[in-house]
Image 1 (cartoon, helix red, strand yellow):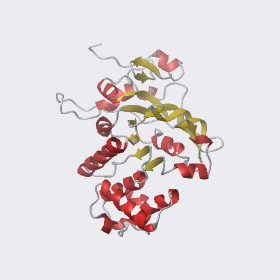
Image 2 (tube, one colour):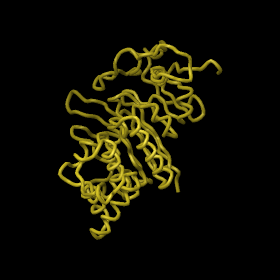
Image 3 (spheres, helix red, strand yellow):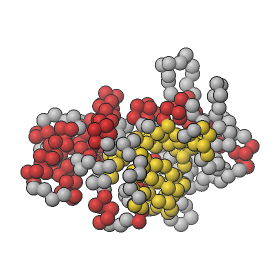
Image 4 (cartoon, helix red, strand yellow):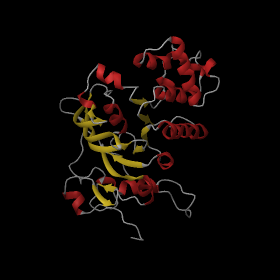
Length: 327
């Protein structure tokens, strides 16, 4: 059995028709290992969520995948249609969406919403389904599940809503969970509980997690590997400890420089000047060029560089990568 459960190969996705087309994902490739956590990190609008929706065939109109492959256990998901995709969603690959409060159906009870996914993929009695639901809610740390199944979303806090989402996503023990900003709308203490729950699922059930976030602290805590995205492309990719300790791409280095550190002397926080580019008008050169402090002549005259291995297991798309004083 292959060590890779999900593989994205040279994925392209865009929005719009006619003369204005937004290149939301521009040639992205990565692999998710069994039982591993891969983080996609970057600023808003860099293509992270578009990748997740493309994997599950949920990209809304006028978005569409225009090239590449998404292989789950050897099968290309982009070639599946209709019932084939529906049989896979929730059972083999599931997703925790970004906004837990608005994502739940306000007119269905918690129990009914978790039961929907069970009914879609299994044939069990209503009594057995209710037992499975209560077990799933209890596993994600929600007390008194026998009462909770009768409650409605308006009666839940943000943290409870997110745990219900996790229960829905994991009730059928999928092999892959895509977690899209699972802690972005929650306070710090609730965030810690949600991350601990995801780690428990990985440890006890062997779930592989594709983690989408802009929070480098979450990446440091959760992820084995990280892919740093900018303007629809991967700028840097490697083991989390290597990328965070020795960032090679100027964008990764700049992101880390914006964070306050308790283990270093006081220093002014850096800021990344400028704004991300318009994805409908991407240049042929590196998209980070207008904001980059390390740009050289090749950056201005050559096409955007491909990912290349600069250190063992660490790939960077840059003509003038960052080197560190002890190298």
